[in-house]
Image (cartoon, rainbow, N blue to C red; front, top):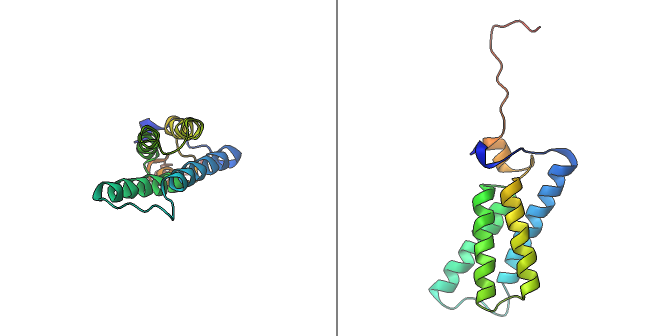
Length: 127
């Protein structure tokens, strides 16, 4: 999994990636879920479930490249199904592709699980 990310930036760049992840996840859910139109078919319920999984995974930074790819595919299929406009789709897909290419940042589950580890050897005196 380490090969999927170039780095796990910390500080301001890490905060920027956190904000982008949260914005991409929120926009995915906000455009997919409407209080007035709940899914009536099993396909609609499955699509809503995939949307929520992708949004939560993006927000938490868990398996970010896969979640970003899934979110981009969801947004493109929503556009083809005539849901949001072209401008909103281009922006959301750009968010997802960018996050998938850059990585989640230091403030994510991926950084905790797959980030660089420091190995200390026991019994060696500090120099």
